[in-house]
Length: 405
Image (cartoon, rainbow, N blue to C red; front, side, top):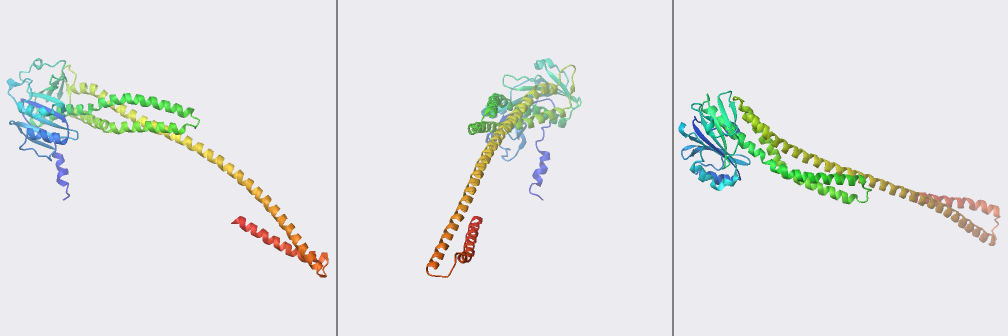
């Protein structure tokens, strides 16, 4: 059996829901923090059952069902406290949980309280919602109400009315609601990054326009300075891309989970109230779109800077090729001149050699004539001419070989 067979198969059973019957209070907290901070918090919450290498666990906190989960960037705690019908009002965190999370107050990214009850004796007004949104979920087997407003301690409140759900469906439905809120907050973390980046992108755009104008008006003399400025802008854009890429990618992933969980609720209208999913989509989608648009703007800017750099390099390359061609033409003209001069020198050298050779032969004839040799001028010319021609041919052959070499 493969070493990962069990681990991969057990992913099907990862992150189970808490199953319970109403009525109850459900407290859900999500924390941004490191693995070490998560371990420290879990040691305070459940020191006896905490497993450092586990991704999630279901245990008891102060005698009540308690679940914790690790995620890539955050970790969550969920506590279910059964309550009597007379106790179904908003309340604060249980003392045991409040003490455990006290050192991590600044890391809480999401806090949700859900009251789970039936329809018997329901008075929606007593829960204090202002302009609430409501939806029938699970094909009409439950109703959820909320006004999506934060309390003074930063908690978001939901009223979950169970009509016909059993404990398993109810646990899964509550889990979807909690995940929607947590993933929505995690997706919204990129909003500050996008706003801060937008002002930087405005500056980058102005710089790019200035560099483009300089590139159009440049005569090639300041190409090196222009190329350095483009490279500097490219480094800044790449730095911003690397800095924000992870956050924007996480926003897309979390937003997709939010919309998937909304679809799994199978919402329908309650009277004339706005549905929860409609409320979330209308106010959450602009955040996602703004982050996506900022990311795309950054990518397009990086492409534009790269294209401008390539255009400048291409133009500089063409100018260098033209300069090299001009230098080659000058070298060719100089070489032609040198060849012409060389040929003229070779011709003059042959004439001089011929003159000196004839002079030497004349001296030989004069010496022989003085010694009394019976040679006429005609015979001497006929005898020495082949020798002179042979010597000239040898000289010409040596010159040709030297040129070929």
